[in-house]
Image 1 (spheres, rainbow, N blue to C red):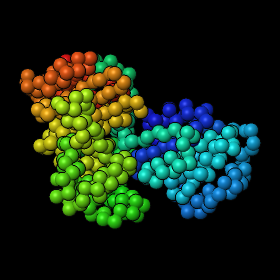
Image 2: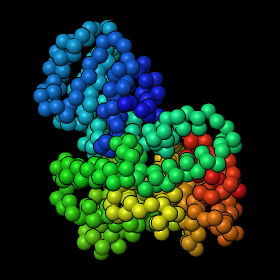
Image 3: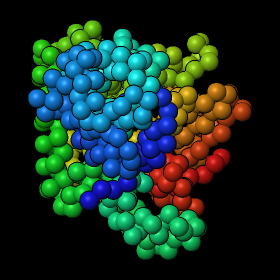
Image 4: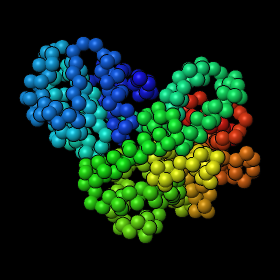
Length: 413
């Protein structure tokens, strides 16, 4: 049964635009399901082509062959036609053919999905520059996760004033956040009810990811090293990355590990975030941090699916939860960073859009002490126009709107 994704509205609204709509994301985030939904939601002349099917690849062996097929499917000059391509990166040099379709047939609107964005990005840059718009489909946000888990609760929450939510419902929402922190938001995982079923589903997704994306498709010569780097990042996720430590731990030279980390970024598995700074003498300017787009993936690579209450890293679980929500909400012109000065004062996240700066510190404590605010307050002294926030699971204050950051409680300081 189809569950609505937040990206659906933007894709449907894009139907009148001339650009090629390219939907990118890691495997199993629901790109094919969403593409079929857009296909079913549109009227008129159209065609859906699954390029994961071997014989369909011949359709795009050349521009002339592609046009023959589209005409057979009902395309006529000067009449609107929509072409839906699933897994378009499976056809080599398809970018040039799509460019020719776009340039010579303005009546044809194209939607295309792809999983392995290293290959896709090369095609987009070479052949489709100025002709495409990229839509990123991530694993479920918590709002989508709530819809997948309990549609009735989702609808009631959406229609309620957040201050009027009864404690029994608030507790249920809290439990779902904790479940999300452990197993993440891949759709197939969210739909699985039992813990062991969730673990097995994540294992199947990422065993396939290692075998297909890392080994076969990307031709990584040392998959064990790539896997060990992923495990190292998972253990040290959210900490400043030291490339020398990775080399020593994984027995991989720095150039190779940087290449692998770049690939994992392009595959929407991890995200490298840089430091925020304006003063090179006083603030860290180079060393990045790395987070996982999905907390369940991080837990898979450290082989730890223990419950939230039984974890000694649950404060970090909330930090990664915040990251996994905010990265799905920010616009293309918004940057997510962290801040640290050379006296080791640190703030977890800096969200910057133009001159607007918001700073967020994540805590998981029943008792907040004055020292927990010190880094935020110091940041505020340095950047007086910024807004600073302390987020905590235990604050008895209003719930954030799900469209913002999820259900963490917060104080603006």
